[in-house]
Image 1 (tube, one colour):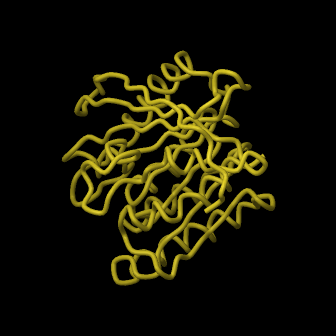
Image 2 (spheres, one colour; image 1 turned 120 degrees about the horizontal axis):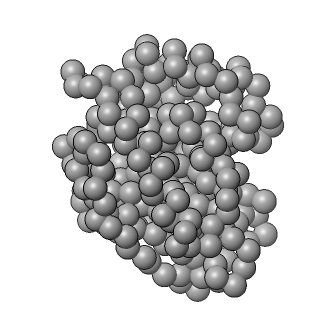
Amino acid sequence: MPRFKSPPGRFLHFGPFDVPGLPSRRVHAYVPWGARRSAPRPALYMFDGQNVFGDEGSFAGGWHLHEVVDRLPPSRAVAPVVIGIEHGGELRMQELSPFPVMGKPGLADGFLDWVAGTIVPMVRGALPLQEGPAGAAIGGSSMGGLGALYAHFRHPDVFGGALCMSPAFLMGGRPLFEYFANRPRPSISRVYIDCGTRESGGQMLPGAERMFHLLERKGYPEGQLMFREDRRGVHNEKSWRRRSPLALRFMFRL
């Protein structure tokens, strides 16, 4: 990890918010040091906001993304404001999938429309953020990685990038891959996908590789699409925490 470390920023908390058809929830933001004195920052909207910053709610610890942001070298990346959106508890898998999952209907369309239409404007009104899709990416892990890529393609006018760690693409099955195969590449698009070799006994890696190659065929310019195989990676926050510095440098580099 780079030696550079900026002074700590500040946390802000919003809500709770009512979500149509889903449980209410809170939203948490980390604003890097100096954000008020500099040009507007890009934003990274993250699913599973309960453990984006701290360890609560996770057996393997949290992501601690605020620490990663503070260590981004200013010569290589623009430190984003990170917005963690809490999940819907027992409905988490459904709200992050646009198609049926585990025998239950997918609820992602309504949930992501709420994120794009309510949370993004609210946060932009409260914080110094860049406008337009070039200034916003959305990310998550596992089902959150699936939901992030879907959110990017469903709302390309809002989210210009997707950060997909250990994405559960195979949970979406054939309809999910057909959806992405039939959608045009967003005009502003940067996509990061990674997966650990040992996740679920090696069963998750093929889905991540398949989606990467599907997107690759859409003709991404050099430097706009990245796939990373982690030979030490397992399916937990410890692995995502370790991989997140490179992911953020890719997503928010100058």
